[in-house]
Length: 126
Image 1: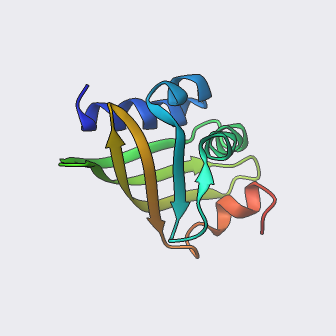
Image 2: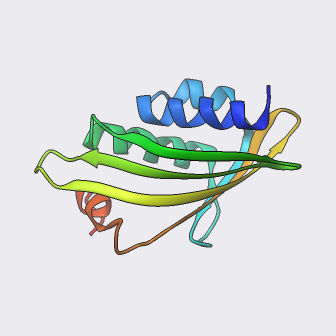
């Protein structure tokens, strides 16, 4: 599968809250970080993705631009969602990913933390 194909499968799984489908395209030892923060393991990332979907059933990605690189992919997308209290999330995100042996091995996510405040509030982190 192409690196951009892996990206599509991963983000489709995240949007659906499907941890098993996301696991299928990731290395078991995959790591992720947000804005250069501490590394998170795959299970932590999947727990977060499912929690977001539970907090905002219409969670989705829009305006997707994805490019393969020699070692993975770079994707820019807009994260959109409406939470139970009616607040909305509209967050522009850039993901830099590494792919090894046909699996996603690392994700580095960058976004405006102020714009992500609605997400933190919905997840009880604000």
